[in-house]
Length: 249
Image (cartoon, rainbow, N blue to C red; front, side, top):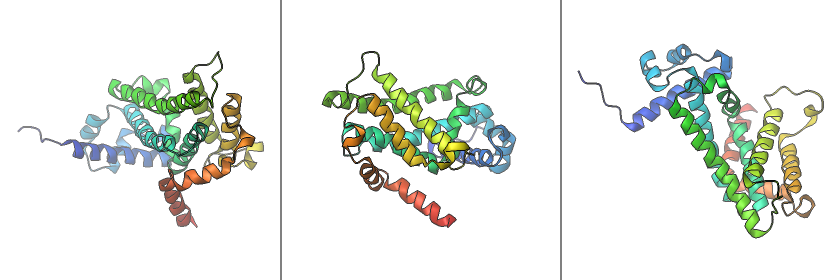
């Protein structure tokens, strides 16, 4: 008997179901608690079918990270479409990143696990190549805003820095701030009094002022810009967060 043909839509839906099961396990048991056997127990597919989709647990973790980056790419795309100056668009990327992390906290933190040698050495070459391509697309969004800032004269690039270095500094700062101030992260000392959105704005402004990116912090109402971002390019995320807050109330 010849094998049954599975069309692309069915295959993608099946893969999505497996990844959602894996996310549920990670949310409950942590990354270390994820196993293929646990995924098999939650989905209506055989172990062979799961292994045909994901070669191992590490391959599944990379796939989950790639899915998160794909979603984030859409957020960044909308951020750079914000009607404002180049510095506002860079801030919009940070705000979009924050909102994405609040809606998908487990996926957001998976990027750390997906980059460890124990995962990268075992996941398939296909998943690894996809990951590199997706990250290149994300950095491309930042590089586009940096190019706009240079073209308008709002940004004067320091002689010792490349656009890629500036983009990476902003990405690393945003990730670190969000990771350290997430609501589900245990805080100690001074961090207990810090608000994620407030500190993200502070840190973005510190970095962009340091890069001499105009308008400087005192010259613009950044809080008003954030409110406009939430009402326009991030209306979908704000509606989803409001629905979640209402459900918890």
